[in-house]
Amino acid sequence: MAMATAACRRPAVMLMAFAMAAAVMMSTVPPASGTTTLQYDFYSSSCPKAEETVRNVVEPMIFNDPTMGAAFIRLFFHDCFVRGCDASILLDPTSSNTQPEKTAIPLRGYDAVNKIKAAVEAVCPGKVSCADILAFAARDSAVVNGNFAFAMPSGRRDGTASSASDVARFIPSPAFHLQDLVDSFAAKGLTADDLVILSGAHSFGLTHCAFVTGRLYPTVDSTMNATFAAALKKLCPPPASGGGGRAVSNNQVTDPNVLSNQYFKNVAAGEVMFTSDQTLTSRDDTKAMVDDNAANPVAWMARFAAAMVKMGGVEVLTGNAGEVRKVCFATNTAS
Image (cartoon, rainbow, N blue to C red; front, side):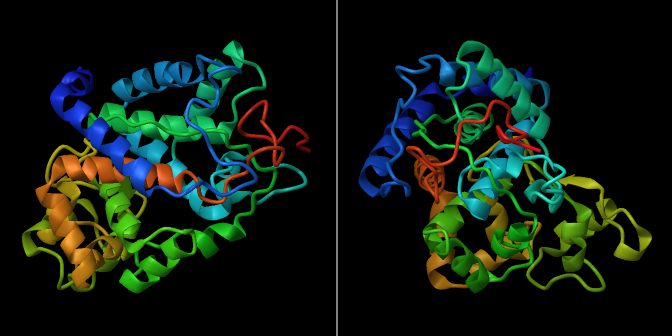
């Protein structure tokens, strides 16, 4: 398959990206929050095959449906930005909590995470948290869809609370302008550079017309390339015509299933979907980072790896906090 072939390409680039990522992470990533820090190879004793088991489930999923890589990374981002990286995004409604986070925003990948968890439980019951499984799945998505590898520290515990109202409070909107985005990331301990770097995940995956039509109708956003806008209008009709739920690829320029620095080239050309994408060029410092990432693919890979690890340490539960769920869609005492 095409994705399987892509995963085997450019071994020298992958090794270089891995080496650069390791150097960047060791020098710039602060300790994760929590009672104890996250650790590399956290499960080396309690579940030595944890990461291998996750990888063995994730890779076939992405080969069968290349859009799943973006879905895993998006789930990881949303999880970390709401209550910290505690797998609260994965919890289903219950009689005592009818409005958990997942009811507030349509995301893909929940069933996939449940399947990964089942595979890990079959190897090491009660040892590996859903929060760590989601972090590993997001990392493995970069390996398959982006052809670069990096280590992901672990030791996260699963949260027991989840509220739909927190989603609107903490998830940055695709309609945000730059300062709103910077403030949103700063609230989670992330910088403007992290914002730009992590936005590169919009090089692949799917969105919906409802998030795009505001830049197309009644008039085209002046920052959007006119030819690009005309092509988008063929995919996304005016809001009054319906079709807001239609799925479209984030990257309309090159392969929409490859995680790469192509996103930054698209931003520079005015060929991106969201206001939150195009606004990255509205300030000198963020525009300079956009331009540098566009020109240096391997450097962006290393930066993206470090930013993913940094984001993965946001407000984590560690030590005796939280729990290790038996299933990812329910707490151990769900009712």
